[in-house]
Image 1: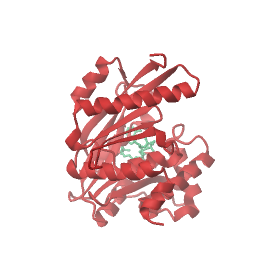
Image 2 (image 1 turned 180 degrees about the vertical axis):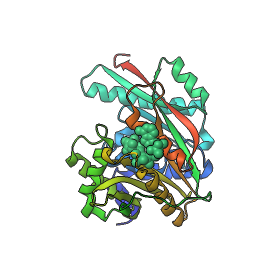
Image 3 (image 1 turned 90 degrees about the vertical axis):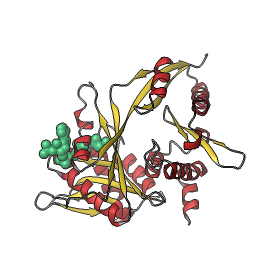
Image 4 (image 1 turned 135 degrees about the vertical axis):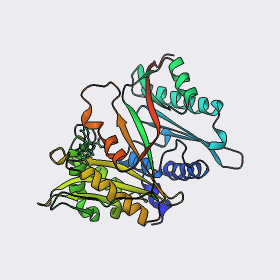
Length: 319
Ligand SMILES: CC(C)(COP(=O)(O)OP(=O)(O)OC[C@H]1O[C@@H](n2cnc3c(N)ncnc32)[C@H](O)[C@@H]1OP(=O)(O)O)[C@@H](O)C(=O)NCCC(=O)NCCS
């Protein structure tokens, strides 16, 4: 099965086009605010983007895509080709997204729906626009990090008896999923079974490579921490998504060592840079479990590219 056929099976035709589109956008604007191909494949793992009605592409007369909108949960994701990054195109995508969410809510027999949208701190126009539209900003936000792989890369250091190794394919899907579920609990998969189905879906994505799905193993063989590295071979940029350590193994330097190990692998495969997203709690209370990753990424040399804020607003279907 070739890449296109494999993709068509996982997430459908829209995912194929979306992967091509974000690759082109990154080529034209390497540090622009574009999803990595790994992000898209990771987001498709739970089947929520299988509905092709949740995707919309706008093309030029020559067939080249100029904009992409899709609905991820209740979020409108808007991606514009670097040559078409205008307010007019942004509004066009948003309008489609609002309409799609409205239709979906009506079909579900409900009369109001919450909409989520993002704006980066290097795009103050969109920040002002959403605030003017009455959207409320969530306290927690995202840090987008970037690291050049030509910069010195220290060797990973693990506690005695711990080792790093790749996942041995689908035979270890259940084990890998249990690690992921425990590291992200109570977020992410609710049950181990659901986690395994999602892990198997990720493993079927065409750019997934089990050699880049890494685990730190404790001396007794328990998987203690894990990360998946994704390659964009066209733009030579890697991505970490996800990174997680089981609660009982935290603060022993495992995520730091694993990230360094992942960076080494990405460099060996010819990647020139890597990306990762961490969260920042803002003033949010009781969120430390999910906000500490930025310290790990900064410790291994990632540098902040931009902050991404999330905004939300409740709409009524009658309007
Ligand atoms: C974020 C996470 C991966 C860190 O894993 P870890 O193995 O504990 O990380 P490390 O031991 O390598 O931590 C390295 C440094 O990061 C910082 N750090 C890590 N966890 C921290 C916390 N809870 N609070 C403050 N600083 C923290 C510290 O500076 C730490 O060094 P120190 O222990 O010597 O002070 C883990 O907490 C986790 O899985 N969280 C839930 C899932 C998640 O949020 N993943 C990231 C997605 S964005």
